[in-house]
Image (cartoon, rainbow, N blue to C red; front, side, top):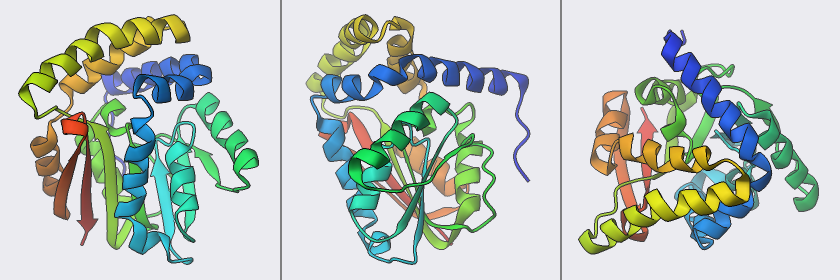
Length: 241
């Protein structure tokens, strides 16, 4: 049974959906520009974590909060598994669908809320979520839902912004993230609020160790994480027993 959601959680979900709808057209450009294209490398590392699953043509992989489909495409290109994408923001999914035409892929995209998915229990061999868990109104309940749809021995891979671990670099990055990025993102997208939300949401999100502990507490085993680019982001992996 899905977790009951509070009025505040539903309000948060609507606000996040509206925000991403408003910046969808500029989302890819700003992602690549503001990260100096390092986000593309991070997605390749996610697919490498799942190489044993992706080579299996009978495997089913779900990319949750897929946005404009960049990770879904990377997963599909990296093997023979059947990849699906889901997101609750229709303008983002429309862009993702357009990429199917450009890349000669046929990834099915389903409009759905990552915290209340319509898939049956134990449906997927692997589930990914890149820069999406942070936006959930309840991170623990979101992890429970991702755990639910995984098959036994299925793997979850989370790519998310995290806490830089190099002291001098940490302060420099936080200045960029909190002061420079919102100005550039706001000027290009027309929504400074969306790019002020980004550093604010990251500051509230659990750091590497706390997210790993949260994954363990909801039932994942073999939980590990790998810092990327000095801890700006991290990849967490876990297995459903």
